[in-house]
Amino acid sequence: MAHTEQLPAEEAFKGFTNTDCPYFPCHPGVERAFNCLFCYCPLNAYECPGPYRVITDRHGLRRKDCSACTLPHDGYRESWAFIQRWLRRPVPWDGSEQTRLPAPAGLPQRPSFSTAHCRMGMAGR
Ligand code: SF4
Image 1: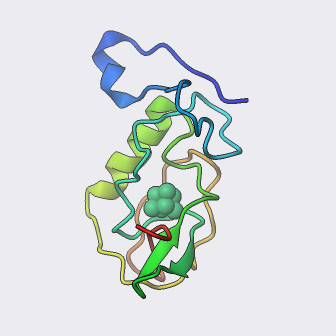
Image 2: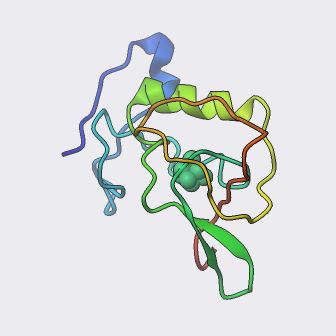
C-alpha cells in the first residue's frame, strides 16, 4: 500500500501524495511515500535507468512505456534526488531499447553515458 509522508517546510517542494487522484496509486511496487510530483516524468525525453519498454504510438513515434517504473515515485526525498541527479547532464533519448539493468526502486543512480541508450514515452501522447 502506498504511504504519505510529512516533509519539513524547507523540503516541502520535494514531493506530495495526491490520494484523491482517481489513478492513485498508479504504479504498483512503491514502498516509500508515493511521490506524485513527477507524474509526468522529467526524464521522459532523456536517457534514464528506468525499466521502460519501447512502443510505437499512433503517429508512428517511438515512445517509452513507463508503466513498470517506480523511480520517480518511491519516496519524496529519494525520487527528488534521483530526478535531480539525472537532470544534471541530460542526454536526449534516441528511441533505443532499454538495455540498462533496472535499479532497485527509488535508488538514485549516476548516469553512465558509455552504456547503451535508454528510451521514453507513452502510447497515444
Ligand atoms: S522509465 Fe525513465 S522516463 Fe520512464 S518513469 Fe522511469 S525514470 Fe522516468
